[in-house]
Length: 336
Image (cartoon, rainbow, N blue to C red; front, top):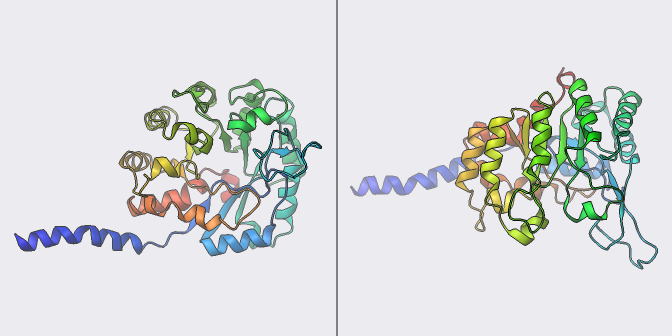
């Protein structure tokens, strides 16, 4: 009996040692080359941070809005929420990304998977901008997004109509995405800061239903840090994500930072069983992103923060989530 008891005591230790032996290589599924002022540390800093963090490949996009420095503000804000000045849609962000990539040597350029983002999602001309950029840079773009729809206070600060994931302008974009084999990364909060129910669920579910040939990546699974500040956890989120994954094979989930805590990990950094079971049930539908914006010092910290959760998954599943799943949904032409 003593020997059996000692054996059981050793099991957690052995599992911990096995997990510690894993050496993950990453694909970053959500990275912004510029910040909300369309500024960046640049490609040398990004490549250095990727190499240090074990990130072999990365999605890369601009930011579809620019924050205004209002003449009444004596100090330039550092983030879109820094003051009450508005933000505005900014198409040149795609040009900045393309220009940065074109300066790279071919072996470095192949590490990046650029997504188009510089369009107003409530303007039916948006699809024309995307078509024009595809023609200007043939063979460069591999996806669309991050499309900003419901996005905390940024929605209220951005000039123009409130964007929804199910509006007519985006319907045209989704059709084009299916025709060109381009995945769409979309930010669509599942609720507001104070409503403890899935207030905006229909806005993301309708496109999933109506565009079955378009691959959607749901940024942060509809969560945000601002929602967490008011609600901590949304108890309805895991069952809704489960149902959506069951019902819509064209849905993929970006687990970038606002999902990590308090959903994947509890306050003691222990992985939550419900989310482990969910990822194991759909091992090819989840991916990791840093969601850094123009500054890359924290790139490794953001990606390595997922390691306690990855270590609790079966190793083949963990490697899919950390590296392979994002690459698998890119256009077929990019994999040839």
